Each structure stands twice: as C-alpha cells, then as structure tokens.
Image 1 (cartoon, rainbow, N blue to C red):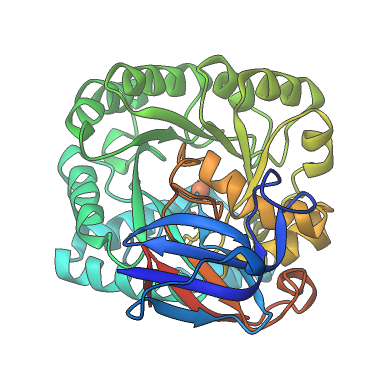
Image 2 (cartoon, rainbow, N blue to C red):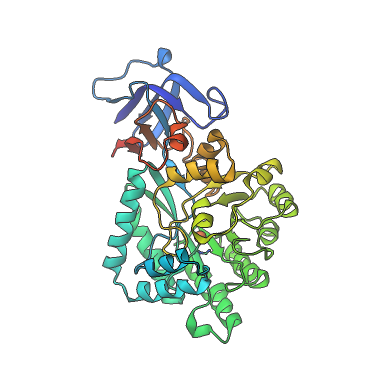
Length: 394
Ligand code: NIG
Ligand code: FE
C-alpha cells in the first residue's frame, strides 16, 4: 500500500535534505510504501502515483517526523498527587516517594497495568509521539521487573515501545540494610534475565539511589548481556554520573541538572547524548540543566517528558519543546531536533525514526499550523492534526 503526503512544509529534521538546520522542503512531499518512506522531495518532482495510493493533502501545513520520547517511566500504578501537593507547599522531592509507586505497581494486575499504560500511550500518540522508551523500575525484584518488561512487549502497537531495564532505580525496602546485595541481584540475575526483553540498561546515580561504583557494576553487566547503557545522572546533586556515563560509553546521560563543563567535555568525547527534562526540573524546583553549555561543548541534546508519577506526570512532549526554549534557552530548531532526530539518537534508532528520510519508518505528524515554531510559541495546546505511524494514518 502506498501513501503520499503532499502540499506540505516538510520539516525532515535532516539538514542534508532541505533548508536550514531542520532540512525544510517547501512545498514538499513524501511517499511511503507499506511502512517505510521511499521518497521525499519538492512537490514539483513528485511522481504520479497509482489510483489506490492513500493521499494526505497537508494544505501547506507543517509535517514533521513522528516525535520520539526517549525517557519515560509510564508503566506504573497508583497515584502520588498528595506528594505533588506537599511539594507545591514547600516540601522537597525525595527519592523515597518511588516506594509508594513500587507498592501500588506490585499490587496491580497485568491487565490493570496494561490498561493504565495504554491510556498513557494513547495520550502520547495524540500529541504526535510515535516512539516511546519505557523503563521498568517500579518492580524492584526479579519477578516484578521481568513482569514489567514482558508487559512492555505487549504494549508496542500504534506507538513503538522501546524497553529499558531500570532495576537499579532505588533500593527496595527489603534490601534496606544491604544495598550491595541488591546491586548483586540486579547485575547477576535481573540483567541476564532481561536479555531479549530490554534494549537498554539504566540506573539512577544519586544520593538516596545508587553510587557510581554500584551503577558501574550494573551497567557493565548490561554491556555483557547486550543491553546498552543509559544513566540517570546529576539530577538532584552532582555525583559523578555523567563521568560514569562517558566512561562506559552510555548511549545517553539523562537529567544533568548539575552537570559541569568538565563533565560535558567527557560526554561530547564519548558521543553520549544528553537527555534533558525541563518538566522534571520545573516540578521538583531543581535548577534547569545547562543546555547551552552542553551544546557549546559539542554534546547532542534531546528533550523528554520523563513521564512518571513522581517528578513529571505528562504525556505532552510538544510542551517540552516550549519549555526547552523558554527554560533551557534552546532555539526552536534545537528544541524540535531534540524531540525528533536527537531523541532517536538517544535510543540508537537514528536509522529507524526521528527524520523524514527514505529508508526510515514512515512515522509523521501533520500539524494544524504552517509553522513548526508554533510548537514552542503557541504553547501548552495540542497542535497535532494527523498522526501517521508505519505508513498508516492513525
Ligand atoms: O526520572 N530520577 C529517577 N526517576 C524518576 C522519578 C521517579 C519517581 O519519583 O517516581 C525521574 O525523575
Ligand atoms: Fe527518569
């Protein structure tokens, strides 16, 4: 089945294909065969298609790659609105709140968890997001973490779910007195069992979570089992996570509110993508990550919702584009690249998604507006008109 999207302001997010840093072709068109893009180019060069091709007339509006959220914790049960309200009254964010979600998640049935996650994925899709990374980390024992990874495999549908093992999220209550025994469980048992279920292995390097030595053990075990490393680093305090991410060649280092220029230098040299989540900083009262400093040091920057019940409960990735501009001082072009091309790089999926380029999956978003900058300028509202996933209009 072929699909053609035409009369578009085609924002390919690939500077090799069009004008400016986002590779704009205007008026432009795109052709897909089944799930893949086979051609993009100027409208004037669009070849005539067979009578059964599905036609999407963009009417001059902006068409972008399907957005990519490269960092979420959306598979959870329970509610922490009380904790949120207390924080808004002045209480600080504490890592211990995660245990509330762990208890609720463990108690929920598979069907309950899937239904909660599906409604969140549906909201992501409605906001133009066609690929979402999902972390475990609210099970925190062997059986429960594997259950979460297995459920993720059942969730990939209209939105592609990319699974990550986050067994080293925080210390579960049962291991209160023996953190190293828990780290051993993660490195020696969870990680090998997650082979084939997870693509990435993540850990939280933080006071109140795990030390760099403990995280190194987990990430190295992941590498031994083919799980690529990611790391929650320098979020609430500076703790050596960014250096560790660079040392192990992590695909991404995430949060980075407290990252330093020396850390940035190491991340750039390692080719580690910085995943920044201004919503999480905003709602924990943390400083904002120094995005400009990272970019000046040559670090690639992605943006994400961090969708989770503790620090940032939102499926609105375009809102992060606006916050990335307003709070992290990204340019609109940088912020849009950060939820497309750069977010795909943070999932090692640059050859699948994040750009409108022949050979990649046909995941695209038609906006209601002719100008992609409206994603930041006309903020907080949903400007998505049509979502195309795998060559199918959703
Ligand atoms: O990314 N930093 C670690 N994990 C989450 C918070 C999870 C929670 O509070 O439930 C985050 O902000
Ligand atoms: Fe997170």
